[in-house]
Length: 234
Image (cartoon, rainbow, N blue to C red; front, side):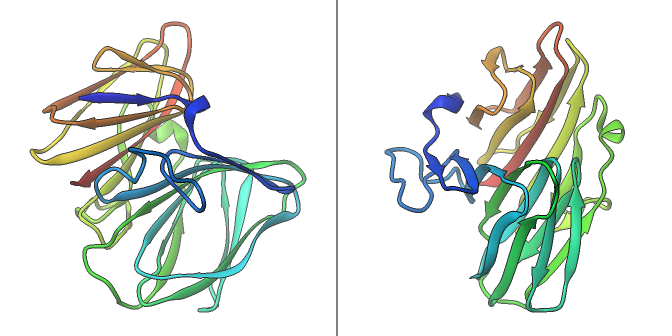
């Protein structure tokens, strides 16, 4: 099954400094059939105005993966971590038993991010934060693990039996991903359109996938694409 969630159908939040589209129910949004996908609970498509952002606030018992599409995001937390994550790169925050953090766009232009929340395998644990560079050229024509609890050596670790992959595809190029029995996948093109097992997925739409053994992803002819794919337990 491949269920296409079109961008215009995403729940939408507009604040003076934030333009956010939610692939799943978030905050006050309660749409039928949008309560996550397996252990994937949140996939937010956020545009943050220059010199604004999320002030200090708290989370617990969540694996929060931030993929920077454009610009950069600057992180601070109560543990003393600070960092700036640039376009194409990833930061991961394992909230554990509780963490206070802030995320700001300190740039002169808009920052655009995907925020992906995955439920951990068990609650609690020491909170932590990390970031890593993932050059887009290194993902050319192949799925590269960006965040993983499945032992991928180059990925940022998360406390979940899940993984988030990224790939960049030339026009017409194809990659495949094997989906284990009982697993769910969710795919979003950050840019460009792709087909997923023959179904068209436009940029910033989502494809909720289950009950298939293999996922075949092909960039549209004449258009390069950048994709993210989450593989999670049901």
